[in-house]
Length: 207
Image (tube, rainbow, N blue to C red; front, top):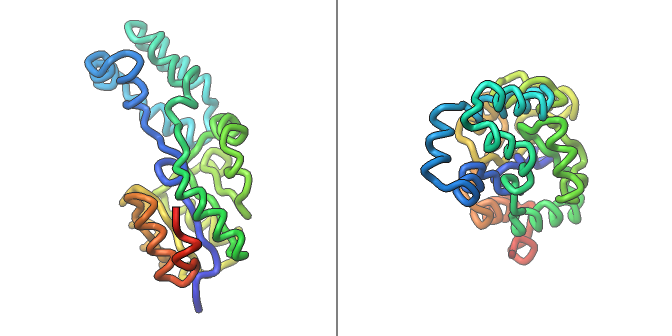
């Protein structure tokens, strides 16, 4: 049996997610390094991705670290600048798969409110056949539970799924369940994999 659905991660697959890059641009690398050394902003964001309220989590971190308060609040106020730009070739691949009537799902660590912010900016986020957003599910990758929840909801066998993600730990967790996987290191490699799997032609897979 072949691939029956393709599952996309979002951050750094369809949309660049580089908070440090944004902070370097607006406050400078030296202050950014000092702030990230003092405040575990990625742990704060993990709580958002598990479904806790976006603004509340940022305010909590900002109030706990008054020396960086205004800059921590940028995580909320300037979030779209951190989650940008889109990766056009990856978006094209998503749409080409859909044009060929291949079911396409999202499986992403993403907060409830941040996903709502992103969708109007990136309309392709509303084009998935099924969207598995961690904030709504209450669990994040690479917890095995989130993959089991996807399987239960879509009703497809693990070996019928092809999953692309930029993080090795997320990929390894999917492989452990029997999913086909691709570790994303750029859209061209992902395009080549889709051609190899027979899901797209070389012409479809071009940027």
